[in-house]
Length: 368
Ligand code: SF4
Image 1 (cartoon, helix red, strand yellow):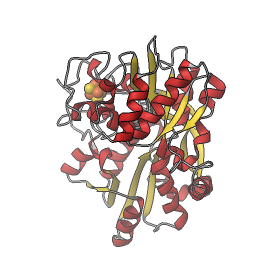
Image 2: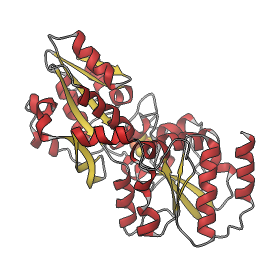
Image 3: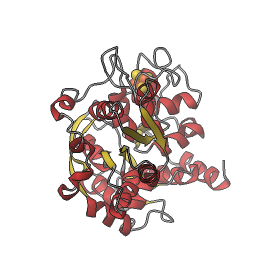
């Protein structure tokens, strides 16, 4: 651990905390650093770190995964998606592929990509094929997707968009009777795009301390120190502990590109349900790029699957921070990274996968 991080940790340990304080993060990168650096165990006993809705792959609704699999199986279609999405399982009849990876094994042309530009390049290189880009992600992913669309895409490329905004899920939790946390550490990279101001509602509307943090342990510890001090002093502000990257107003170019090509719409979150104004959709004038329309997918077929999770999977409660990954009865038994049952064990940003990667296989304690 860096000297700066050690010094911040010492300041946290010196705080005169008494009761339990629950701090939620909503970023897979935060959760990864917390788990890999052992920050839970390093913090005082009464500070609990909770992983909240920070994994876009985990909340991608089943109907979208289902649509992507269906599209990939069409003749003359190449389906491209960020690598994590390929292994996300869906509930399907036994004879059908349950993931894009399974569809690929059965002969579909499914390709992992690392950036939206790669999707456009594949379409340009294969003009005789229809290329569908399954674009699932939060604002940090949606911004480059918007840039790709704004630049102009080949006529044989369409988009199956499953973009989500982060803050409405936190707002939904805070508007519920049991939010389950006392302070928030807000995602630095989302803030770098959309502006840290998006998180002001946490202190201003709900009276909870909040701080923006980057991915590194020292930035996270600064944010923990900030919200714990606020908690002790009975005050609530939004403290930006990531000023080098998360500037006021965010990235104006990225925000303009998003606003130019996408609308904000109500959106379904897997296992959670519809959250108002939490998703992105192509603007009506760009509907020619919408894969659902281009291939006349039946929206009723998708709606039937709303909210579904694989049997026994507790991903929805894990995503909302209601339980720890190892409190799911399938964790480490039926569900492992090699054989994932739910999306939280698939994605590198999923709480179950991260916990497993950190070597925490069983033995839940309040601190783990
Ligand atoms: S252990 Fe598997 S099934 Fe259980 S919540 Fe995690 S991903 Fe879902």
